[in-house]
Length: 292
Image (cartoon, rainbow, N blue to C red; front, top):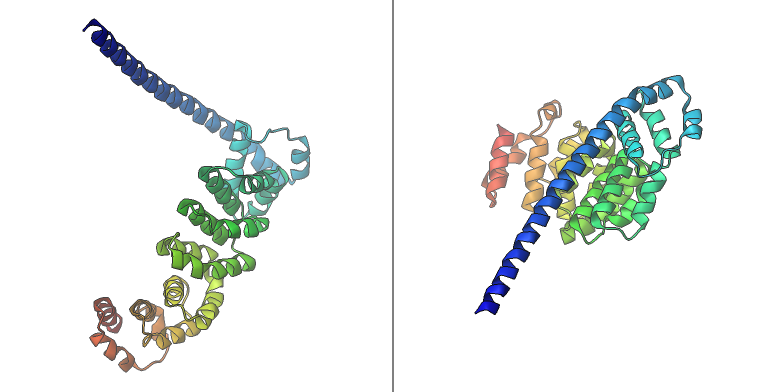
């Protein structure tokens, strides 16, 4: 009996110690992160005016030559945050990209992509290369799109679209059939990623949609084109898809034709009437909306 009591007491003490250690570790980590973020905020406030002055004065080469910031340090992270902010400002974008390149950020994240790191590291590196807009990252990101982890593949696709070059668009379009087939990246994620290319990509997307027989591809491209400025080519393409055998394609074509800007193009309104009796309910609904 005494032995059983001793065992139970030992188990209770052990469990209590584990709980206490877990709570202590959590609190310590939270305090450490709080101090780290506070220091990062102070460093950003300190570096922001200096970096703005460097870009304005054009003394970038001298700054890079004198820079001794160690990769991965808080100073390095703070500088990166400021430069990524400047990448979103039209007047400072070119200089900010040059600094990110010459200070080694692009090279650092390239090395992260080529290493056998965790999914979090791969996703972070892919996201940063996309935000930097590094054309050299197109091929590594294209390979990463087929990663088994959905999160990594989704971030790689979004970053590839964010780079926004002709080569990036070509790579994305070549990967789309497989992505839509295996479902590792959601259709919604694909659509929102394609929008990052901007209106200039509309013509290329339309040409690609005219060559493929894959209904999923056609539906995704039509959904993307809806967000871009209307063109006669897009309007005429949507008209040809009203009789497509796939209901998703018919529905997307109707949505594209319902855009207000399409009123400047001539067409026969009778083409919509058969769709009011479509066997699929959402096509009938969209047909009624389009006619209205």
